Amino acid sequence: MKKITLLSLAVGLAFAAGTQAKVDEQQVKKLSNELTPFGAVRGANADGSIPAWTGGITAPPAGYKVGMHHPDPFPQDKVLYTITAANVAQYKDVLTPGQMAMFEAYPETFKMNVYQTRRSASYPQHVYDETLKNAARSELIEEGNGITQAAVGIPFPIPQNGLEAIWNHILRYRGEALTREGGQVTPTASGDFTYIGFDEQLMIPYGVKGASPEELQETNILFKFKQKVTEPSKLVGTALLVHETMDQIKTERQAWIYNKGIRRAQKAPTVAYDAPGTASDGLRTTDDFDMFNGAPNRYNWTLKGKQELLIPYNDYKLHSDKLKYADIVKPGHINTDLVRYEKHRVWVVEANLKDNMRHIYKKRVFFIDEDSWQIAVTDIYDDRDELYRVGMAHGINYYEVPTHWSTLDVYHDLQSKRYIAIGLDNENKMYDFSAKLRDVDFTSRALQRDNR
Image 1: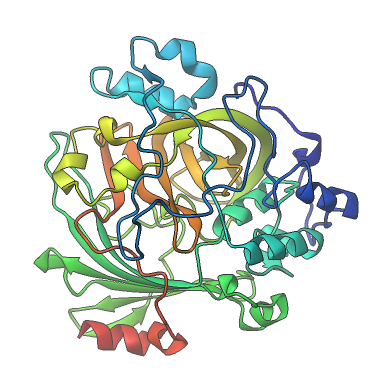
Image 2 (image 1 turned 90 degrees about the vertical axis):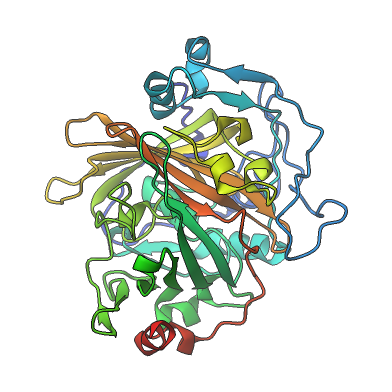
């Protein structure tokens, strides 16, 4: 791996069975001076291309109102330089192997427009406060397949191993509850596509202000997710319900699928790991959703350190409601004129399949933004140790929460030369982070009632 720096605060230690030791008081104090509350380096990098952290976006652009697609807070920014197949070699130190492979796969059309770096990710003060508490108390249990003594904030802002780092991504703050409309496409090699629409609800007990570790441990629920297909007509009636747990050994993920043929909701224990995602045409696995989700127990996780990398960031142009889906979806990859790349520091986490486990991915390398714990890029390898897929998450700041989250996740299959783009919402109304959801909305009975 190119130019990965192993920091003294994040040495890649082998993870031992049982409970992982918490960081000491001196390390926690760093989160109030040399590090941000989320564990990122506060200062600029050596040449200033990554600026110092100043708190991110603390106020929305003038004219913004809740319910709008989020306007670009940096409309004056210009492209600094563009990477193409002709000059990609000179930028290899700030690209992943998967990103390099994209230029090989699409030498005539793939490019990266690079802009100045804006450390725009921001969160409510109470989330920072809870993260400081978590730093001194959060622990992994069940060999890393569960978590305890954590609530609301990032559980391990000073990660000591790869498992802690991936749990930070899984539990990053995204508000308390939301409803959203959007969809996905799986274009053919020529760019033809059928839009598949979703209506989704997400309730996140872990993120509720005032939630306590004790309450979460008692309920053993991290979040509840419900999804139904709204178009095309032949798929209407397909629906999914998921209960994600904190201790996945005590209680595994619970999932139900609504079967429109028999008009009933049925338990679906296979909605996990490498089972194909909903209507994905085989282009993503279930645990690809949100770049990675679910139990981490099939892999050995290694924290490799940090790297300066060009990643999608502040992709407000791609998020705009002035666009039609046809403006975004192109043959081979999405429209690269709409994508903004910036240089950021990322945590590098490598997941290698355990000898006694099965998954179509033998190795996955995750590049996680230090300011948000959002996986920005992932390189995925098959059982021949060849690059298989490249995932990219196109993040923005959702001002009304606030939180940094992707507006679009794209997985490129290098072998079939196709891709899946998840989260298209340009032609839909914006997420509602003020939604009032209840536990009774997330039962198998509710799933059945909603889809009859």
